[in-house]
Structures are given as C-alpha cells and as structure tokens.
Length: 495
Image (cartoon, rainbow, N blue to C red; front, side):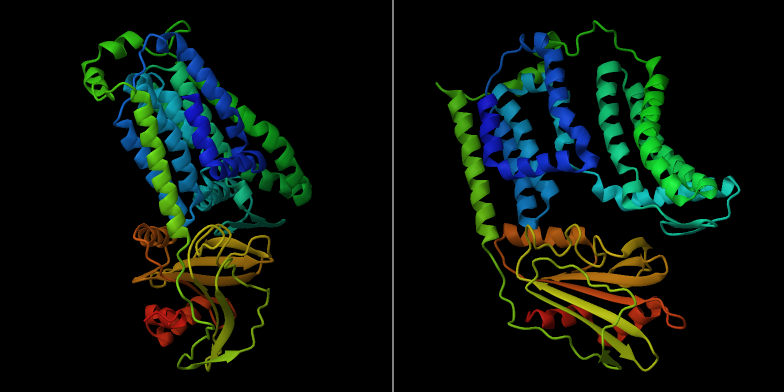
C-alpha cells in the first residue's frame, strides 16, 4: 500500500507539489500541514482492531480509481486546479479498498474521508462570507450607536471608510474550525445528533465571531484612530480572539462528550460478522497473484488518464491573425482615459483589445475583448485573478451588480470614490454565459470529445458619472450592439 501511494504521488507530483505550496505559503491552508500527522494518529488509534481484519484485493475498487482519475481529468481539461488536486487525493483513497478490500476500508473510513481536507478549498466562499460579515458588522455598528452607511462590503463611519476585504472574510478560521470540529466529532462523540450540533456550531460560531471582530475594529477606530485599530485587529484579534472562540466552543461541547476514553474506535468483530460486508467482500480478485492483477489495473487506468489529458492539452483552435473592435450603431470610438486606470486581466489569451465608446447622450462604455485558442493552466478566461477585477491594483470588489442579460455583473471601486460597473460574458461553441462554472463545464465537454474551439471573453464596463449612471450606459450599449453571441463569434472568426 505504501509503495502504491508513493508511486501515485510521484506520478501526479505536480498536483501534490501545488497543494504543498498552498499549505505552506497561504495562511488559509497552514493548518493542513498538521493533517498528515493527524491521519497517522487516527490510523494508530484503530490499529489494534485493524490487525484483526484480513486484507484482500478487491476488483470493484478499480471503479473507484477510475472515478478519481475522471475527476482529475476534468480538472486537467478545464484548468481547475481544485478538481485536479481532488482527483489526486481521491486516487490515494480509492487505492485502499482496491488493494486491501472493503472491510479494511471501512475500518479506516473516517481517516480516508479526513484526507479530503488536504485539498485546498474555501476561497470560492470568500465573496459570500464578505457580504455576511459586512451585514453582521453594520448591524452591530448601528446597535452600538455609531452612525454608518453600508454599500456592499464598504462601511462608511464618521472616522473613515472601512472595507470588509477578502482577508477579513473569516474563511481562514472557518475552514480550520471545520477541520477541528470533524476531528472532535469523531474522537469524542458517538451520537450523530451531538456530532451534528457540534458541526453546526463550528460553522455558525466562527462566522458570527468574525462579524464581532470586524465590529470591534470599527468601534475601536472611533476612539483610537484607524491605524491603531488596524494594528490591534491583526495582533489581538488575529492571535488571541479566535483562539478564545475555539476554546469556548470546545468548552461548551466538553460536558456532552459521550465516548469513553477506553472505548475502541472501531469494532473489527462487527465488521467481520456483517452480512453486508461479507457480500461486498465477495468481489475479491481470483487467481494466483490477485495483488498484481489490481496493480496492473491501476497502472492501466493511470496511463489512459495521462494519455487522454496529454492529447487534450495539445489541441488548440485556430485564431485570426488580428482582431478589431466592431462598429456599433449610435456609438463612436474615443480615447481611453479612465479616472483610475482599469485594464482587465486575460493571461494566456491570443488576442486582447481594450477601447472606449461614446454616444451623443454623453454615455461612455469601455469594451474589453480577449480571445483564447485553448483553456488550460495559465490561460483560463475565468481563472483566479483574471477578468474585470485586477489583483494588486487600486480597484476593489464592492458588491454584485444589477442583472444585465446573462452576464456576471460586479460593482468595483477605486480609491474609495471612483465607482465602476463591469459585466462579463464568456463565449465558446453555442454557449453564451456569465457563469465561470458553466464555461468550465463546456470546456470539459470539448476536451472529453477532443474538440478544439476558441473561447471569447467580453467585458462591458462604465464608470458612474454624474448624470450618466454606469448601468444605463452598459444597457444601452448592449442593446445597440445587437446579439452579443454573433458579435463575439465574429471577433473570434467563428462561422
């Protein structure tokens, strides 16, 4: 089993290295560095009972391995690292029942499931957590008698404007709390109701506590100034507050622990006597060398997945030598002079264009177009840090924008007072959408069928100006431009 795991980690070393870098470099995932040690401890807890179970190669486990590799393939096809890394972890998990049989897998079922926490996830919850934290904070700020106005994730108070930024969303503590709660629920509880209550607390309490933390920062700033409050927030709240919250949750759950210290974590005799497990275990591999048979099956599946991924990665759609922003009835091109420089990011695109249009009513709309020959690592139209919000720039996300067609609408702000509306569309094949998830599904389907099609990114944006609101400018431009799908197809020379 150890040799197979080492071989699989070596085969998918790029994915494991990317995960390890995230564990080490990104504070959201620093707690994952402890999970391999925790896994060893969990198995050691079960070891006396595990030794009573007989390992046997189990051919249906190859189906689980194929499923894990399929998840990895979807990630490789779409450039979604989360799916690639999930597939790599699932493959290690699937190898256990394949080589050791379902009875042993049931004996280590919780450690196997706990392995999923090695996959760096949670960043996708940041925007929602920002909004929840902002709502909790503004309620507490007003309750404490401080006059304040909220606009998306920005809270304006008498001493200054505060932003509930990504780092203030609370996702770091929430993810770590869930990992800790799962461990406590398994090690200290037997009843499922008590486990469910603990996990609910591990989700709700850190979210509420993060809102209290943000309120505390704003409240302190009213008396001591923003700089002092910010330093107090990072030192006291960051290092002490959440440790206290964690201790309070465990202290509240302590009296309800219902697993005795000397209780065995698993019951090997019950697993061996189970009629269901006997029927499931019946699908063992027959022959003189069953272990070699399943090893060969795993190797064949890995070779097929790697080959399929390589074939898809070499596909590339043909792009025109040059693209041009089209004429739009009632609009004409003007110099691009934004109040604060704004230039969407489209890494890996074959073509990029950015220009500004104006009409006789004084409305102005900025148009950004990018055309990709393929989607993959480093060239994802909807990838992290790509699109309308430029990372490490003056621009920050304020809130979701108004619904405009099928586009993804966002309100951005720069320097606290320059507002901009940006609406994003993606086009590939027959799909026109503002959803990054739908784009990735379409790309996955193309790669599965080894079909090469270009992807076009379109962003219509406008600054809010007195007498010329951004929303109306974008709506009018979209109406005058005609069907966006045809417009985007012409740019990419799609017939």
